[in-house]
Image 1 (spheres, rainbow, N blue to C red):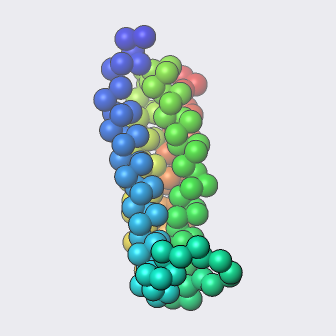
Image 2: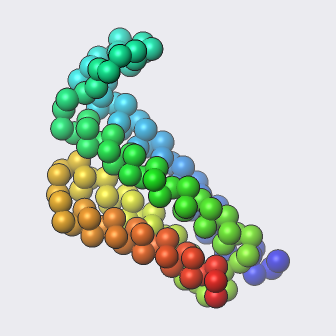
Length: 137
């Protein structure tokens, strides 16, 4: 179990930073929607189909949804790395690659930058693959 503890500090930092990124997504999406629809809408029950029509608010919502699609895989792989230990280093490198790519993805999506944003998304998926390789080696 000593091998697992060697990377424990990386895993804890990555876990905390990933939760901070999740909270950032939620707050950004809420802030941009509230800016358009008002604080009454935000504080209310949000009944009906009223959605923000502002491009940035929609992009923030889609970026958040996209993040949430890969986040469970990241958490599962990160827990696997913590449990099994990552003697190769691929898992930790992949974890950092996923996190940095997901951070870079946000401003690219908000700005509407198409192909570079897709490339950054591919890098985040490559990070998940590296995490899997780290578990299998």
